[in-house]
Length: 372
Ligand SMILES: C[S@@+](CC[C@H](N)C(=O)[O-])C[C@H]1O[C@@H](n2cnc3c(N)ncnc32)[C@H](O)[C@@H]1O
Image (cartoon, rainbow, N blue to C red; front, side, top):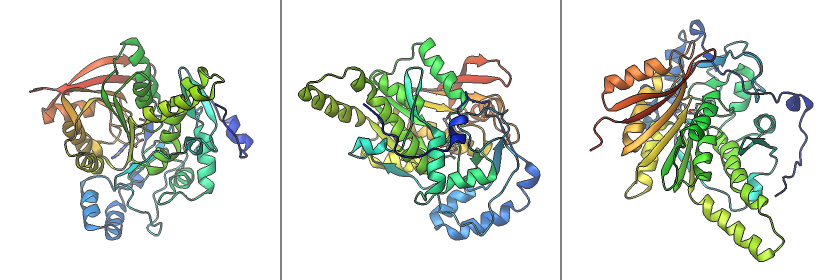
C-alpha cells in the first residue's frame, strides 16, 4: 500500500521528529485554585443537569498541567513547557466528557488521507506533529484542543484535553513487557483505556485478540490518531504479501475489513464510557485484559478509573497498568494510586517491573481479590 502525502508540512514540523521525551507533568498550583470554583460554576451553567453531576464528581475541573519534560519531546508542537494558562470564562467549550462510539469509515483510504506514516519497531503510527499542524488550522467539531494545547503550552488541560496527542513513554515500557513476558492476547477481549495513539490495543489486535476496544477522552484523538493507526497497522500484512492476482487482493481487502470489525472506538470520560459500553450490548461481556498507560496522573480521576476497572474487568481478568512514580504538581503517581486501590480493597496489585531510569516508572498488574 502506498500513502499519499497531499499536503504541505512546515519544515519546522519535520525538524521536530526526535525520540520520545520524559513526559513528566507539573502543575503550578498557585494559578489553579484561585478561580477554580467560580469557573466550575460557570461551566456547570453551560452543561445539562446530567453533565453537571459529572462536573461535581471530578471531570470538569479546569486545571491545566504542563509538561516539563526536557526538550526532545517528539511530537511536540507544544514545545517546551512555558507557562500555565487556564481557560478564560468566555472561552465556551462543549461538554467534552460525554461518551460516544466512533465508527470505522467504510473507505479506509480516507482514514489515512493527509497522514504521514512512520515506522516504530513492529508497528506503524501516524506522525502526530502533522496531525496537530493540520487540525490546528481546521475546526474539528466540538473540540479545538490543539489550539488550546498550543496556546497554553500544555500536554494536558484537565477536563478538556487529556494528553492523547502524544505517545507517553510508559507505553513503550508496556510494549517491551508484552514481548519480554510473552503476554498472550489470542482469543482475549481487550480494552486499551486512555489509548491515545492506541499502540497497546494495536499490539493486542495484531497478536490475535478476539475483540479490541479503544477509549480516549477526546474525539479528535480517536478520529485523527487512533483510528488511522489501527488502519495503518491492519494493512501492513496486506502490503507485505502483495501479489498481482486481483482476486487474491480483493479477498485480502475483505479480510482486512473483517479483522477491523474486531475493533471498536470510544471517546469520552470514563464513567460516561462505562455507561455507554454497558448499555450498548444486552449482555455485555467483560474484558479479559485492560491495558492502560500513564492514566493515573490525576488523583481526582481515581474514583472513575477504579470504578471502570470494577465494572468492566472480567472476574478472572487483569489490568496491566504503566505509570511513572510521580507526576509532579498534579499529585498523582503509582504509590498514591496503589494506596487508593488498597483502601478500596477490591483489587490486588502486583509490581511486574520497575524501570529505574531518572524518574522511576512502574508496570503493575491488578486482579480481583476475590475472583468468584
Ligand atoms: C497522558 S495520556 C496517555 C495516552 C497513552 N495511553 C500513552 O501512554 O501514550 C492519558 C490518557 O488517558 C485518558 N484519560 C485521562 N483521564 C481521563 C478521564 N477522566 N476520562 C477518560 N479518559 C481519560 C485520555 O484519553 C488520555 O489519552
